[in-house]
Image (cartoon, rainbow, N blue to C red; front, side, top):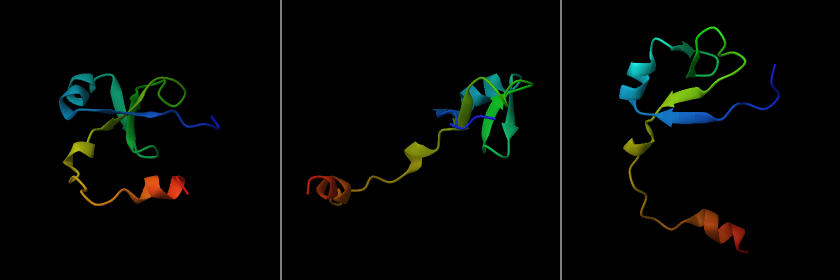
Length: 68
């Protein structure tokens, strides 16, 4: 088993629909992996939900913490 997780790639729902015959959903990863070999190799895909987040207009506190 890997010690470093494979990076997740975010794709749109239509792309996942087209790739459905090649991919299966893995509950342990909460992502889609290749059928048959997805536990070891291949991409790890997640549905892109990130654009639904609201824009935050407040101050970026992370940047000020790193400049101290």
